[in-house]
Image (cartoon, rainbow, N blue to C red):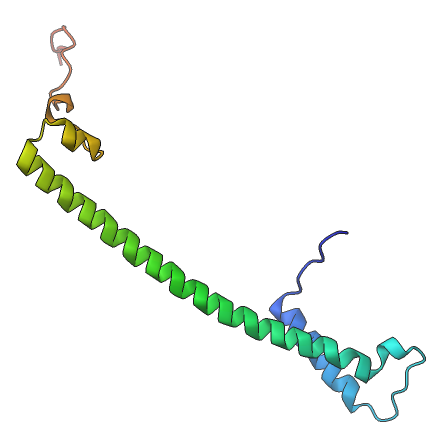
Length: 123
């Protein structure tokens, strides 16, 4: 069975407004019982409950995401500090520094321009 597409918040608000108007119609008596106000009301109640639950879960999710961001940043800062402490204790060219994801001093590239072997062109 195909998953039903979710209505936009604007469309939901319109549909709920239409139902509110339906309840105000005096003498509304449909031929099919499934279209009676009493048959539609539980759907509206479930929808309201689901929307409220969704809002609560989204707020909780935002809190968890903030916590993950804070803790991730703190872990990164602590790892950087530990790498500096390791370099100070064992040296910048040690395998211990490399094991922390840093480049050993002897493996760093220099910033010298490459020697092309030619002379400078005449202007």
